[in-house]
Length: 378
Image (tube, rainbow, N blue to C red):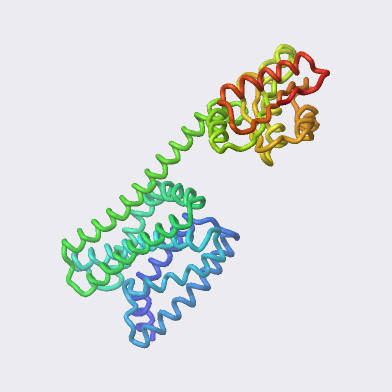
């Protein structure tokens, strides 16, 4: 009985080791919903059921050793979906990648032990352990940060793109699994070992290319965003305003342009200092953007001047809320010195963006000089 148990453990140990490192790498890649203890307990219980099924299939004469049960590993998606955050698609991407890593190590192990004429399942366990220990550090320090970067950017990607990544991962896993099975019943050869290494290299190079493509795209987006964003207020800058105005003019629709100039802003800088002056601009930018958020956007035109574009005719109540700035006291750096506003309703056929901005600017200054007369509109 003891010898049978020892024989079974010797056969099961390579698979148990693969399962352990697969669960470990998944843990490193995914985000847990629950505590580590609870997650480990659920996975241990599921693995016990998995092993019981493995023993039953072995007793019935099914070929279940040396990674031949890899397709059944997709059953782990069930506990993964419960225990970890993410969609089915995202978790499938993580799982496929982890199984490519662990099955790759197992395939290399079998080829190395056959090539070196190391007989017995315990030799497989020993070589497999060495390969896992040697590669896990590399995986954790070099591959994992890049892989997590890809996963984070995949969350906001279109569904068809995610499905493509799943299909690609499944294809790589299928190719590796097919190669693994085809080499099981043959003598160890250097060409087999090199073929496995080549396939694994191609797989990880493809991951690195995907990482570089996403990284370069992200950098381009950030550069484009920086070119159209005011660094102080995080509003759109003058270039962004010009771009959006051109788009509005092309649509030939009615819209409103609001030019806003902060009153006595120099006094804020002189009295409180430029740091408070910057906070003053940021505070007004945030409040005005919140007020206009339903159908409008605010831009920093320059200095203490702001421009807003509103789809349609901007309501008088919105203009009054901006002038009153009733939310000002919520975290304000200093008292509010009011704002002068000019409003222009732009009806098709439109004039050019430069002409519109010149006209609404003049309206604002006329209102600034005649503050008590209210806003002038066209």
